[in-house]
Structure formats: C-alpha cells, structure tokens
Length: 501
Ligand code: NAP
Image (cartoon, rainbow, N blue to C red; front, side, top):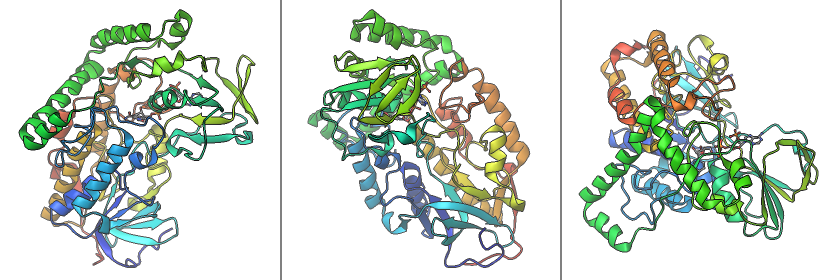
C-alpha cells in the first residue's frame, strides 16, 4: 500500500499520463499546447508507440486508412499507401514525439502497478514495479485496450517444446523457412500474418474457431504527384481526410441502428469469398454463420489466397490439447508443429486489470468492475475515483472508424475538465454516481439494438455477453457530447491538507 497520508516523496506533478502510445502522446501534446509543463508520461517499455511498437509481426498494418489514422493537428500528406504498415505508423509516432517535444516528459521502463488517491492531500500516489512512488494531482490512463495479450487456456500449452509466441510479441529470431507452423486464431492479426509466413514454411495449419467476415482491402500506393499535391494544398488534404471519415462513418448507421443495411455488404463479402476460394468445401468452412459486423469486419486481398495454398490447411475441428511436438484436434488428429503462433487477441474487456486503483474511502476499481464489467462516464471518468481520466476507456472503442478521432475528443475533454477544476477552485472533481449510472443505462439500452449484440460472441463482450468496449453511436455525436466538461456532472472538493509541489 502506498504511504497514505504522507506528503509526496519527490515532485508533485499536475498530471501523470500512463502510456506513451497514440493516446498518451496526444494528451501530452495538448497539455503543452495548453501551457502545462508540469506533467510526466509513464511508459512501461523503452520506447513510445504502444500497440504500434509492440505489434511487429509480418504484414502488420492498420485497417483504417492512414490519412485518418493520424492526428488531425499533425497531418501527414506523405503516407506511402492507403493503409499504412506498422513501420510507417511507428515512424510517424516517433516523429510526432520529437516534434511535439515530448521526450523530456517521458519516463521509460516504468510499469505502473498501483494508484491510490490521497483524499486528505488531494493527489494520486502512483507506484511503479520497483516500488517507487510518483505523485500527481491528475492521472490520465492511456494504456490502450489492445495492450495486453490474451492467451488461450489450452491443456498442455506449457509442455510444448517448439517456439511459441503471441502475435503481438513476435519472435524475430525464429526462422520460419521449412518449418511446420500452427497459427491459432483468425482475427485481424492472423489474417495479416498468415499470408506473409505461408510462402516460407513447409506447412501451416491455421486453427479457426469462428470464421471472420472478410471484404476486399482497397489498398493502393499513393503516387509522388498526389503526395506533393497534398503537401502543397493542405485544404485538399483536409478535404480528403473528411471524405475518408464520412465514408467510414456512414457505417455506424448500419452497425448501430439498421443492421439490415449491412446485408448488402454481406453479399459483397460472399462474392469476395467465392471469387478467391474455388474449392466449395473450403469455402463452406470459411463462410460465417452470423451477421456481418457482429465481429470486426476484416479487410484483405491475400488472406483467402493464402488458404488455397498447397502447404496451408484450415483446421476447424477445435483444439483438444497441445502436445510437446504439435497440436491434437478435437477429432483426435495430431498435427506436428515446430512453432505455434498465438494470434488470439487482447484482453480488451478488462482495462486496467493489472493495475490496482484505489479511490475514495479505499474503494477498489478492480472489485467494482469485477461485478458487471467496466463502466465509466463517456469512458472517461469513474465515480469514486476523482481526478482520474481514461482514454479509450469503457464503451468508447470503435468498430467502424478511426480511434484517433475518439482519442482527440477525449483529450479535449480532459483539457476542458482541468479548466473546470480550476474555475471551481477545487482540488478534485468526481463524477456523480447517478450521472454515470444513467449514462451507462443509456449506452447498454442502445447497444442491445446494434449488430454487435446480434448473436455472436466477440472480444467486444465480457464472458456474460455484455458489450463494454464499443461506443454505440456516431463518433461526431460522441465528440459533440464531450465537447465540454459540465460542472453539473461532477462533485468538487477541496483537500483538507492540500499537498504542494
Ligand atoms: P481477435 O480479433 O480477438 O482474434 C482472436 C482470434 O483468436 C479469433 O479468431 C478467436 O476466435 C481466436 N481464439 C481466441 N482464443 C482461442 C482459442 N482458445 N482457441 C481457438 N481460437 C481462439 O484478435 P486480433 O486478431 O489480434 O485482433 C484484435 C484487434 O486488434 C482487432 O479486432 C483490431 O481492433 C486490432 N487489430 C487491428 C489491426 C489493424 O489492421 N488495424 C490488425 C490487428 C489487430 P473466436 O472468433 O472464435 O473468438
């Protein structure tokens, strides 16, 4: 337990940001723009980038067009192609970090393990993996929902003698040439990496539990002429960005209000499958039996062709056990493997699960969220945890548009909340429980009508099927509603023994 009641050991920061990915860096940049220099970004790794630093598997790319998957205030007219690949995105993040002057604010190799609010002195005690304490009035959690790998629980996993790694922790030392490889999972990561490694390996077994809906990827390289034009005419570049945004945003209409509208996209996906997979038996096993959009729609030109290769087998019988030298399927078939790639996704429904957060009166966020999944007010604030903000918190993820848009909306809200805190002359602000409850009742009522709750189970949902990850509306609606932090939504208080910097 942090040293409750004592004055801060060391400097008292105005803001501590946890995580130096897209969200944390955006928060840092906007604090600087607002004139705030007394902040620190705590990053568990040795470099910035978050998910784009960690995911280095072959073929890793973003499925949101690059011109939109970048900061609106730092456009990049020179993206090489419509859907940027991981190295180019990571290079953009590194460049932004330098340009924004954020590096001096980042403390690397600092894994935050505990947060406890000291209500007497009005600040958060933040404890890292070494037991060191950092003090800040405000904490912004920007760890990202896709930062912690989800490992399956399959008997025998620990006894496997070959190489085994998660897609987001790629072992670049492993040489795939001539090896027998098992890939478990058929989500966004698996469909990108499978076509890249398939040509190298002796044999690849792809273990599919649920087939994804896959539509063509409208990817293309941008010509130098277009890049120069975007660079010379920022208004044109901005117009293009808006066009891309509108093209993606209309889908929210189908996802959240009229799932029937997605049927035509479903026919499009079936035609894609038929065009790329000539074998009717394989096609039948690849055709999903749930509504398109229920799980994330995947985009790929090379996934189905990879599955048609002689050296690739699609295994749909389920996994019974991992053996020291391979995998036994539920039908009893044993397939040897030199390497298992776990493309099994992330713990998206358990944000902050590895972080102990203690709020007012010693309440524990992990305990509260364990009952019915994570909940917050606009994904940003949680009653009982004053001056604690989250970026891409509960029910603010997207299935249809760029998360950077949501991040920028949330960062603007936090900046406005800090203004409000000052204006109220308070030391801390705490969202009212009734406000939070009403908000979440509304979110869950809306989300029940969406395609995401139409019968499939996805990583958007908790084990009980509650969707705690997605925003059930339009992104412009979210931005409009979070434009200002309203005093009526919060309780404000002064710390009786206020700590000073
Ligand atoms: P994912 O979409 O959650 O896919 C995980 C896959 O593993 C699913 O096919 C799942 O099957 C399977 N799986 C999980 N546990 C299993 C088990 N015990 N046995 C067999 N199969 C199992 O994870 P992801 O592919 O890493 O992608 C996660 C998210 O990251 C994406 O949806 C996306 O938001 C993001 N991402 C984005 C990009 C991009 O292009 N921007 C690329 C990669 C990832 P079930 O479907 O049956 O559960």
